[in-house]
Image 1 (cartoon, one colour):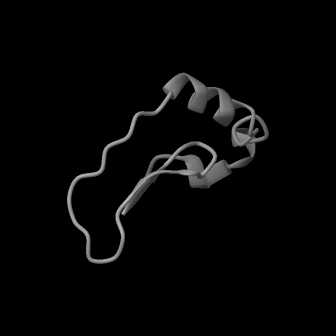
Image 2 (cartoon, helix red, strand yellow):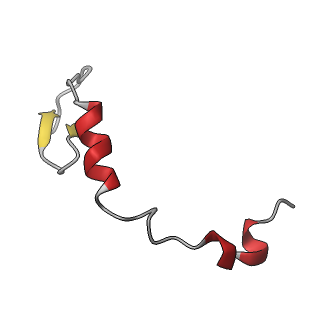
Length: 56
């Protein structure tokens, strides 16, 4: 098990055979800023999804 930050860097990690509860502190504002700059939602075009986006 592991926890990573928005860059994929490990913040906490258990090795093989280890068990317990992992905790880490995340800067949620920084993570949101990073996500916004990635463009995943910027480039989406839901008007082209057609029937796959309609409720059944």
